[in-house]
Image 1 (cartoon, rainbow, N blue to C red):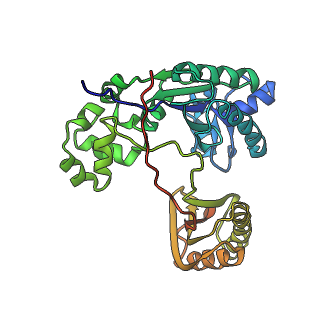
Image 2 (cartoon, rainbow, N blue to C red):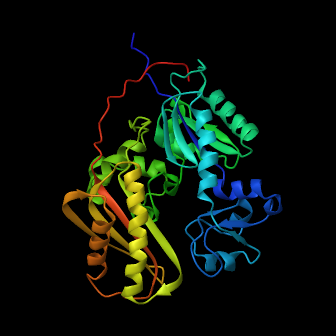
Image 3 (cartoon, rainbow, N blue to C red):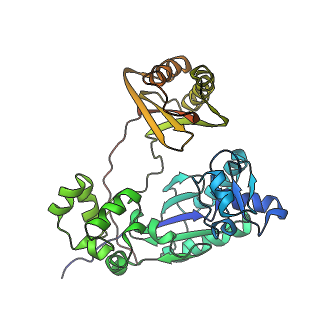
Length: 360
């Protein structure tokens, strides 16, 4: 008699419109109103939008000008990251009462591996319900959850019944769940790749599954094998409690567009100083410096240079960023500058995942 297949039990928790919800919780006058965190109707980019604003097509990464066009009654508030971090710590404390295998993706979302958990609860679905209930009662915010056998499916599932809902995709349901999804719903398949797939006649997971490994590798190179696997529910990445950052960055959007490189250097000095603080806080250094430039027409350009040694010092970051700045002339006035450092001195260790059999 064949041994039963063993599965992990993964929960993806995603806070609902986190930044905007915190602002509405702290200021009752904002509740029920269309709200955008970040930017303004003149400058900047929307960091987060309330569900009332989303009904008008306001989305994160949208310019403040476009957001105001979509929703004339939109209210803009400045982000308060210290407050968001404070709330995030309270939420993560709840997570850790259930498992130490918590992998934060950002302040407002995380993966939890509850295959074996501190409550001894065999049901990942019930654990997710309990966590969401506690977040609402103890913090005052709603969260959504996806529950499945791996991180990829759990991530997709958490978006399925948003806001304030959850979805479980049991092991025997994984392939049919993925087959019926529009390909643009697949986590990690962005707008450009979606368009390429549409041109190849791939509109759903079922269409993707019908393509051979050779076909996908021919059209999508190394990503082809990844697409071939995920549509079959194959995704073996474990929940990493100490997930190692691949890059560290700092950037700033300006109140007025910059046209002079002299003013840009002044701004880069401040950005390099902020980046140095972040690097020293975590004792990180890196070799590859990338300068990010967003122009007044909202196009973005990056320029990179890899050094033969690790750096984290503000002076070296600034000198390299200046070199990249003067590499070629600006094509437009500049609305945003950023510096990031990758190729870091953090060692990524591969772990072997042992799957255990438990009732899902």
